[in-house]
Amino acid sequence: MLIADVVGYSRMSEIDEARTRLLFHSDLRELFEPRTAQHHGRLVKTMGDGVLVEFHSVVDALHCAVELQQEKARRNAALPPEQRMVFRIGVNLGDIIVEGDDIHGDGVNIADRMQVLAEPGGIAISGTTYDHVKSKLAIGYRALGEQKVKSIAEPIRVYRVVLDPAVEGQTVGARRSRQSLAVLAAAIGITAFLLAGLAWWQPWQPGEGASVATADARPSLVVLPFDNLSNDTEQGYLADGITEDLTTELARIPGLFVISRNAAFTFKDRTSLPSEVSTQLGVRYILEGSVRRAGDEMRINAKLIDSMTNGSMWAERFDGEWSEVFELQDRMVGEVATALKLRLVTS
Image 1 (cartoon, rainbow, N blue to C red):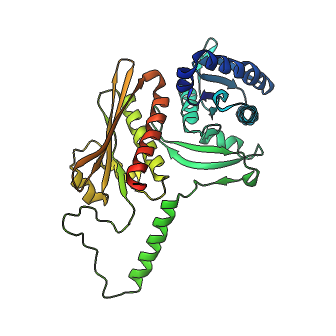
Image 2 (tube, rainbow, N blue to C red):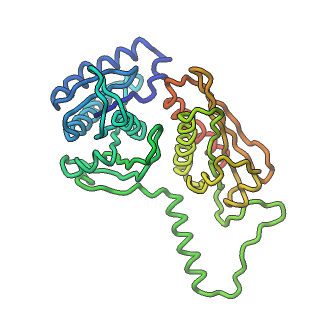
Image 3 (cartoon, one colour):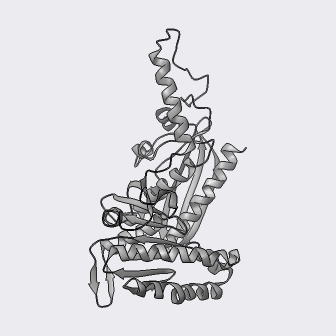
C-alpha cells in the first residue's frame, strides 16, 4: 500500500485554507486518481491531507509513487512557491485488515511511518518492500538502517528512493556527515599517535571549573531523551521520535559535535545533574525537553543548558493539535536546530 501526505499543510491552510483545499483536491483528481488507475491501484480514502492507496503488486505501488513524485516536481516547477503542494510518500508490503471498503492494520501503519521518514518530494519504503522491488525499477536506494517507529514493536528497515540516474540500480549507505568524517579522521590520528609510543604523552586534564572532557574544539551537545509527561505509551513513542529527529537534524550542522542517540538513551528515565551528564558523555551543552498532551492539544517544551554554569541558555515551547502532531514535530525540530545553530555555532 501507498500513503502520501502533504508537507506543511497546516501552515498553508493558515495562510489560505480555501486555496489549500482546492490545490489538494486538484492533485487528487488530476494526479493521484489517474496514476492509481494506470497502475491497477485502488484509492481507499483521503485522510485530511493524506491519501491511502491499495495495490495488488508492491512493484506497481512503487512505480506509481515514483511517477507521482516526478510529475508533481514538474508541475511545481511551473508554479509560484505559495501554490506548490509537496508530498511525502511511504510504501509498504505487509498484512492488512479489510473492513468493507476500508483497510487498516500494521501494514497500513508502517506505510504511514515510511512517509514520515521520506524527504519532502521523496519516497521511503520498508525493508519488505525493498526485498521485492530492488531489481525491478530503474531507480536507486539509500539505506537508512533499522528505525524505531511509532506504534510498531520491532525496528523497521527503511530505504529512501533515489531518482538520480547516477545511482540507478544501486543501494548506497547513509551519507556520512561532515562531523562523522572529522571524528573518523580524529580517531585515526589518535590511534596512530598511540601506536607511535610517545612516552611524553599525558592524558588531557580539564582546567579549573571545566566540565567537558573532550579534545574536540567544536561546541559539543547531547539531546537527552524527552520526557513523556503522561502514561500514554503512544506519546512515549512520540517523545523518543522527537529525540531521534533532533539528534539527526543537529548532527547535520557543520561546526557542532553531537553525541549519538544510543549514548543519549542511556540517560532515559534517569534523573541526572547537568554536570553528571557532561562528565559521562564529554559534552558541554545539554538539550532536554518534555511532551505533554491534554485532550486534543499538544505541548512540547525544549531547553538548552550549559553544564559549566548549570544555567539555561535558551528555552521554547511549541503548541499544536494532536491530529497534526507530525507537522508540529517537524516544525519544532526545524526551529530548535535553527536556534541552536545561531547560539552555538554562529555566535
